Image 1 (cartoon, helix red, strand yellow):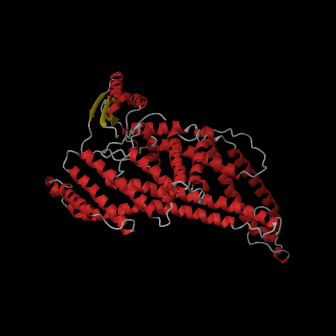
Image 2 (cartoon, rainbow, N blue to C red; image 1 turned 30 degrees about the vertical axis):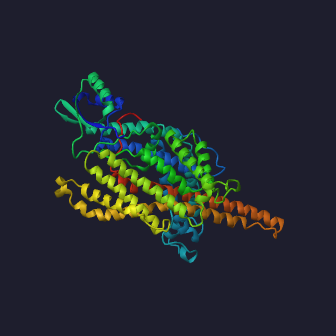
Image 3 (cartoon, helix red, strand yellow; image 1 turned 90 degrees about the vertical axis):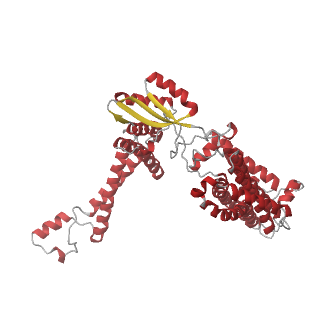
Length: 549
């Protein structure tokens, strides 16, 4: 569900605004529009956070560039992160000097290691030095050997200071991140407080379940508050609270950077169920699923719990799909061939797989429409939503007929389609809304035809999964063809090593492409096709309580 929000206007004594903000932060139940604050103090605090991030990157960069065998530098003793940035600026300045000196050396190297002071003295005495030796028009400040010595000293100093930066403890800087983020947030919250004489006011949003906790804080601190429901035109933040089993989906939504609008629906349950199925079909290989699962289990202590649960579910679904389709690294396992489900999914014409994809698609889209109809009842527009479910069912039959899965469209389907069209055209817009929304009726024929394309779009589950399997098969064929009884033993040993390399690289690339296809196709089918029919625009922004990190 999407948690109801209350708009909050909070009044306090202007001289006590910082303590008020600290109390609100301790409460951890109010969303403030911190992103809109761009004042000088906020900019300064953001700069400090950016400096910390830059310092960590510099430490990691210099650590990678540290020459092998170089003796360990003495521990970095400067302040963090400022000392790292200051030392890095010094290194940059030294590098600039070294580059300039290197250009000077290249310029004067053709003239040899002459003494420019002696040459200048001879010239001043009126001696024609040019008749004895070729000299540049402008003499250098030092002789060539001295410049080369200076360059060597500069490079040694650069290396030493770089090693000193590399020795700095970036973990100490990373430990500052929560504190720095809190300072940025607090500065932004201070900017949002407006003062009117002796009174200060700040506005935000509070989840309805947290109102009682807020009232207790109001009583303790002597604030004045006004709580009200959102009004038309306001867009409150979205706080999604799915059923406990499906709460890990919030991590995926946060990772994708999406949130339903406040007035829309929480689609976590169908999203997770269908995404698991899409994940399995797009990867299409039980061995790949086992690799994903093994990696997830190995990273259990490092992964956040939500991501661990999600990846375990998705990987397990892929392994199960591998069992049902009998596909392991692009090849079947002989002892699973007797299972009827394996034969059904592996028909040579691929009709069964396409039928499965279209069936998944129509169930996904019809779920959205039936859900809308139930939510809108007893409003008359619910009839239009049920009509859309009938249109989708008819388009499903049409799709299967087009590709030759069904021999034709059943007679009863035309009656269902006719009744559905009447429901869609008759009840999508209320008579009282014809002036403002009448134009939407003109778009209905196009929307009905696009429903056919929406169902066909689900065939990507089969196409991408099949492509993954075929790529795996080709790598297997390429690798196993290298070893032959006609070759000498030493040749077969080399070919065996090449075979292993091809299998590892080939299946590794296929795994990477499978991950990319999940991001593209599995996300699209949920956030576009399904969401368009459900009416979820993903135009919201997530609720984020003002609290300490």
